Length: 205
Image 1 (cartoon, rainbow, N blue to C red):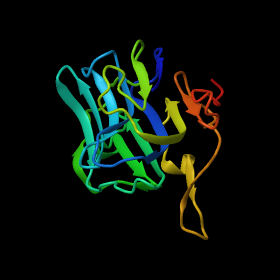
Image 2: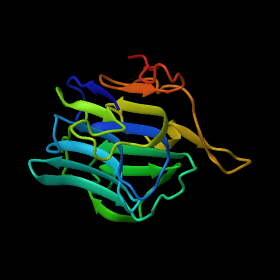
Image 3: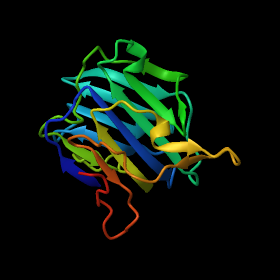
Image 4: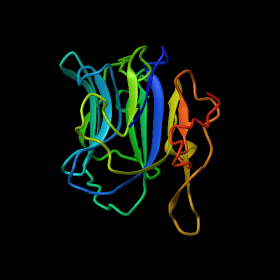
């Protein structure tokens, strides 16, 4: 678990990007979770036990935004790139939450419930804790696998091409190493290249 208490940032616009490789399938595993010490409120992205990827915003016992993939991710040996775009100031309801997997926006979703305009969440909320690889309030959903180039960009709605590109020869989605130029107030970039210092922030923050 890597975590940090946030200061006041942009609660309606942000982008999260991570390259992950699961060690096992059929178990729930957390990618990120922003909360104040419990499951309510929280903004969380995780693999469920059916190997679908979920991302939802939960406040006062109400789910205010939830995406769940139709696809199941069961290749424990492969790296995958996950991008979550939170853009609730967007006038188009279907663009307020966006999932990108390996450079492709996921539009065939099992659950596609976008939040109301200008809905806030726990990411970039002052006093909320941003957790990577765990939820922070119990040991459920702890991530078991590898992560690399985990980034949060506070205040900007981006796309997968800001963090990766398609190799024209192999057709493989590849990483763009390096931190996004303007991480914003709570933004960070964890390359995780040094096993002794996994929480080293290589962004301008």
